[in-house]
Image (cartoon, rainbow over all chains, first blue to last red; front, side, top):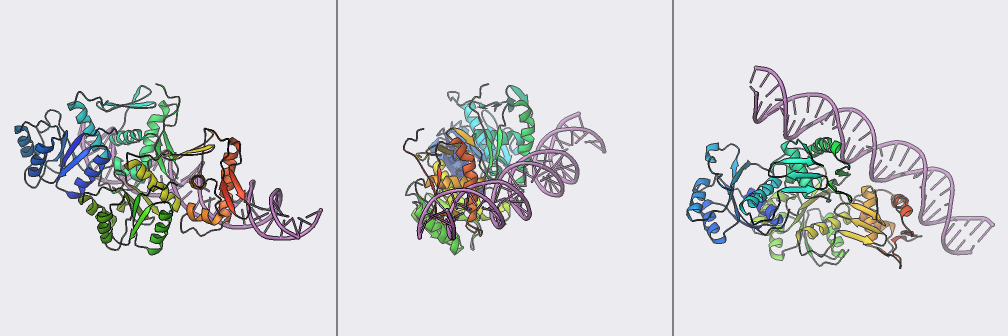
Length: 235
Length: 235
DNA sequence: CTACTCTGTCAGCGAGTTCTCAGCCTAACC
DNA sequence: GGTTAGGCTGAGAACTCGCTGACAGAGTAG
């Protein structure tokens, strides 16, 4: 994940979620501001002119509609990534994602959030050199099309398999513990066993290995998993 | 082990463990502060602004979650290394290793703790002069990938073999007694015989010697073992 | 409603790892 | 050269960890 230095404004009233996002996005290389309500959101956005806003649609004072309308009326056409709880009525959200906007339901995985932000920035800032292709060794991922190729052959992945593979590729040649994988790839309120990581690695390998020359996902016993690149990788 | 002068705050209620960590980390070149509960942790962290916090997730007053939340809400985004007992439910720990954070289960080895702290500092401080490569003589260790090379040829080590070799290399050209090795490389509650060090040195030599020109791990009879570098070492 | 996909749990297997021990080897000191 | 304490190593028992197939439940499409 590249250090873009782009500025993100987080608008989220739940403290724990707000802080989770702040920490993660700072670590991912963004300059991060965070506020807890719609009024502050408009004020801060006006002053700091962020490159993107991550906006909870259910806020104590205004809802997402109101905040966005205010912003637009002030001639700020910053792209917005809306967050909404799964049980909120969908019509709250309908019609919001105009232009470069996007939305996702809570709870989500942190890695997914980062990926979406990058995708939005990629689309809204054409000058920007950031590629939508993630290519590591024998595997390439078209992040716009959500398609995965092993040595040019497309393979079919479930959503979780896709996120896991993307995470490992983004951290290629670095061992990731099961705890780290769980924290980044699974939804932040996931409450299950780490064994699920093993299961999904197994699923992934079953789809990848028949098409690859090397064992791309390596197990480091007692430590974690690693996506490995090899010296003589050409495609 | 380089003397970075970085500041570590230890938060751990068990006195014996707290003192062990304090002593070892001071010796490893850190400036160390130590407190026994979450309330003090927040107070001290605010004042002393440590570079990293080592935090037991099970504390008498608050749990790790609460402490971290308090810290974040005070705009301290210091990285955290969480400690948890092996028998604690795993979901206590889930969602913690965001950003540059990490966690490890008790009991652990001191050397492993130090290595993790260095790894976290390496990643979260981008100005970062510290390399993830540990190279001594004919052997190099890629600490991110957990991979070991003897004159460029990769060798496969078990976790304990890896920790032992890293410890000896970090203390190259200095004799380490079996007692010292046990104290640093094995988990702090290890209760067995020193003979195990001999066994593991034997395992290591069997894997290393066929690929090296010199006898890298030397026995100092009656004293201990030493990882030796030689004048005409190149690479 | 049915069929299908996807997620998450689990149990059993097998391989890798840890640790101990006994017998052998060797360095060092006489 | 003999003695001895310390070190080396192969064998093996006990254990741990990761892999995988089976399956149940949720969700979704037809």
